[in-house]
Each structure stands twice: as structure tokens, then as C-alpha cells.
Image 1 (tube, rainbow, N blue to C red):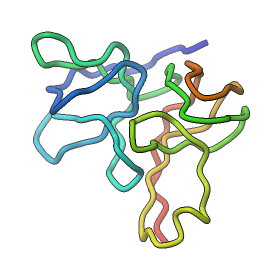
Image 2 (cartoon, one colour):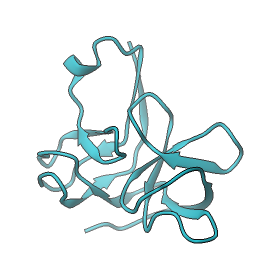
Image 3 (cartoon, helix red, strand yellow):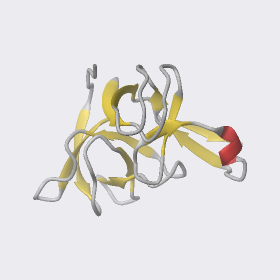
Length: 126
């Protein structure tokens, strides 16, 4: 069960779905839906982009996120190509100089599960 902390409202660039990982675009107070683990993570969206082009992003504590595969409680999560949370597999990131992680899964689930994660973005530099 999520217990969202600080929530910031941003301008949404492109389509941003609900329960997806949001990343910074480089523009002030603007995010977009993650498409990998190579861009700084802002947090997790609550309801996706609204009709005025804005999105609420949970930036701290716990958030509900859609899983993009099988997850066990305690797995370190990263965004997949659709902004869903998947288990970090360092062997799949062998060529990446930097990897952004979202946080740690608090509950197990499978593809499509809306699970709970910590929102503690970290940068791994190799």
C-alpha cells in the first residue's frame, strides 16, 4: 500500500500514463514518461497527464507503480521502455556507463501488477 510523500506538479512532455516512472526532460519543471534507465528519475506518476498537460509526480516515500515483469519484494527497480518498473539486471546494463534506479519493491507481483515501491532515485556509475 503506497503512502506517498512529497508530490510535485509538473508540465508533462508527451504522453505520460498513470503509475509510470517519470524522468526529467532538461526543461524547468517538466517531465516525461521514462523509456529506459539512462535519464534522471523524478518519481512516479499518480494519474498520468491531465487535459491541461500537467502531471502529479510522487517524489518521496512510497508510490504505486505498474510492474513490467515478475518482481519480488526487495528487488531494485528501474524503468523499462514503457515507464513500468522492472527488476534491475546489471548484465543487461553491461554497456551502460550510468544506470538510474527508482527504488526497492515493497511487494511481489507480475506484469501489469500495480505494486508499491520506495521512491529513492539513485545513480549507479560504472
